[in-house]
Amino acid sequence: MTIPDVRAYPEAATPTVPGVPAAPAVPAAQSSPPRGRGGFDPETARRDIPVLHRTVNGHSLVWLDNGATTQKPRQVIEALGAYYSAANSNIHRGAHTMAREATETYEAGRQAVADLLGAGTPDSIVFTRGTTEAINLVAQSWGRANIGPGDEILVPVLEHHSDIVPWQMLAKEKRARLVPVPLLPDGSIDQEAFAHLLSFRTQLVAISHASNVLGTVPPVREMTALAHRYGARVLIDGAQAVAHFPVDVQELDADFYVFSGHKLFAPTGIGALYAKPEVLAGMAPWQGGGNMIDQVDFAGSTYAPVPHRLEAGTGHISGVAGLLAAIDWLTGFDRNAVAAYENGLLAYAEQALSALPGLRILGSAPGKIAVLTFTLAGHDPVEIAHWLDRDGIAVRAGHHCAQPSLRHYGVESAARASLALYNTAEEVDQLVASLRRLQEEPPGARAARQP
Ligand SMILES: *Cc1c(COP(=O)(O)O)cnc(C)c1O
Image 1 (cartoon, rainbow, N blue to C red):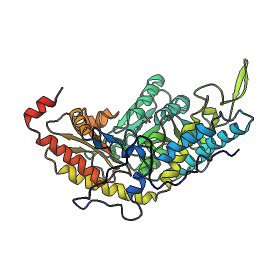
Image 2 (tube, rainbow, N blue to C red):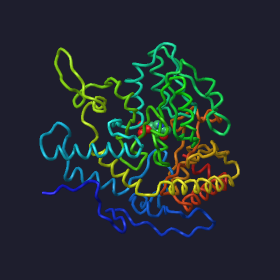
Image 3 (cartoon, rainbow, N blue to C red):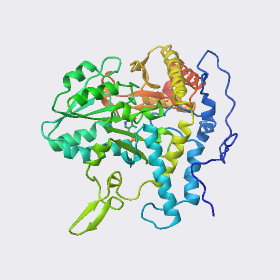
Image 4 (cartoon, protein in one colour):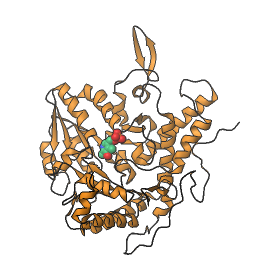
């Protein structure tokens, strides 16, 4: 019997998913939006994503909540099905064909992550549930061994709660200090303040490669080089970055780099930590269990080499099969062309949204990713999200797990449209048109609409 290779998928002309209606025809654009010139056409990505062809509240879905999670190509969905239909087995410890095949899939996934990040060796990749777990792993394993009383951990104000709270917990436990690095008015990190805050007390700098609220892409390579002069380690949170532009951890000289599969078109529950081989080699286990040991005896146990030492218990094997398919899918596009397309779409969206009276975009750092967090005078962000949802448009409203970023702008809550490679200028037009209708709604209609 032959086992289907979970990386090989039949080429279908149009995606057909049972029960999901075909996409309605997209109307022609009115203005002169980006059309995907120069090597990337968003329609080629859209064709692969079944959920983009459903309707929500009678309208074709406009998914602008990619900062929270991305939609999945059929290649990923099929990889999960193929794994469970024909290849399900635990890994590493089995002495049979399917155990070997599952192990091969798992390790091919590790290699794919290493390639995606420019990691050099797959042994520098640890699978985790996602970004949050990867950061907690570093805090619990590396942090507990290397952070002591009086030490400092520098964290820019724009970080996600996942890149603040684990360090806060560690600092409390070790009587170390968590030091916020301030932002400039445009949402970029104040580099002068950063340089002043660094000292020989700094043990760790934890920075987003791209902010999920402000879109800011900090100069992480320069910041890392500066931190290294003080002997500090640098963790880069790539949760938003990986889906938007190519990453090279060796070129960045990152000590740690973390991301989540589900923001990279892969399933939830799988993500990864990259750590420099020499740093990883010194990291003690943070969870005990199967798969991470060498010998177990009641007198004491010895542990497996990294990365397995940091992966206790059965991993998310089907998730890795899905992640492998997602990486294959994304890297099948010309990534620089994708980034150029997204930048064009961001510029188009910024211009279109700015034309709405009372609309304020939070975050305008040069080179930001396609994230548009905004407030609209007279309208609560949750009301905005509910209104847009009636038109089939999904945006996030709230604090976006980054309260300090919003407080920098004096607000506690905002709406956010976050774009991916499969979004189009027509969808931006629909967002703007819906917001305009909200603004033009007579006061009586608004009162009647509210619950
Ligand atoms: C989403 C996100 C996280 C947390 O990711 P999880 O998948 O919830 O673990 C951390 N940092 C940033 C910048 C994010 O966007």
